[in-house]
Image (cartoon, rainbow, N blue to C red; front, side):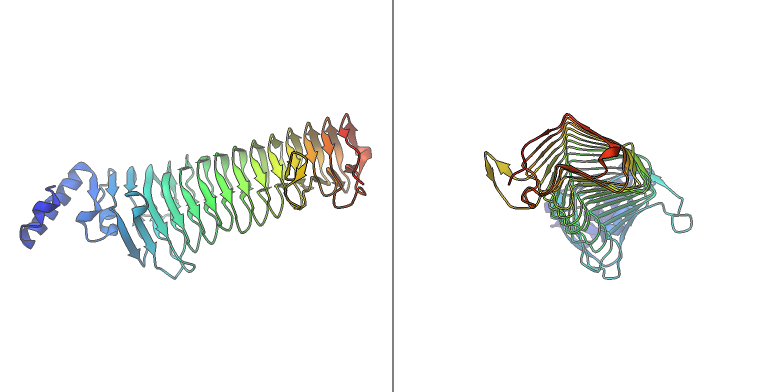
Length: 399
């Protein structure tokens, strides 16, 4: 393609001819320059069936209907946040849809290997998802900014094989920042989530690997996992959710929550509602109200080890007065609570509610507790006849 400065000095007919030649060259090379097309949808439609790259230029692109990409083996790439797709739709429609061209006739149709990078999508309270991907295998999302959409920021539905979401920022969306429905071998790494309804929802899936993300100020919960097997959450910062930092529910098993900082969440830290064979280890739980960890009656076979559950305390001084809660065991069984530190708690370190069985509470350090009760709450309370409680170091209850 000739430089733009040369195009400017020739006739409009010549410009049209050059654009036509450039489009033909695009098709030959598989590199689509959206500047040479009347709108972004035309550039997406021009991508070869065999795949290629669609380059979106800088600029604000207002749309009232979804952009739709039906190609596979394609990469859609912008110029960073300067490429801004603005969804003006007020009928709940997404900004960008990825799916097979026959999807509406056959919802089981799939495409493979779509990559999205380096652009921004924003919406409004009446718009839909920022990005809706349906039946896209090996989707790779990175370096996107997706904000202020009326639905989910990113909604992956039946993107079963190996979805990857990395180095993106998902903020101020009316539903989840990232919603995953029926995914497998999922990687969510190095993203920022801010003030969505929930940060991430992973439903009816397998093998979520969520590492190194920053979650802050969510209007409901941080991470919600349901009916999902064999997953790991590690090295994440989950702070100041109005609800619970991590919710694990509905036939989950084999999930590890480890080495996260879980701080100042209004609904508590980790709630195991329906979870089996899970490990909660080496996390820092700081000033979580209601509970640091709760194991519900439909959960069991849980290890809770090496965690620090505390208030905000530095060098003999309490930095803030938020109530810090400990562990609740609610009619559950086969639980090991070993090697944790509990300090600066409003009430108990461990409270057993209802009939619990086969509980081990061993080698924990418990100090500065029962603050709200002025020493009236014991460190460990409940059905102690069904629990092996030994070798814990419990300091004198403050008076």
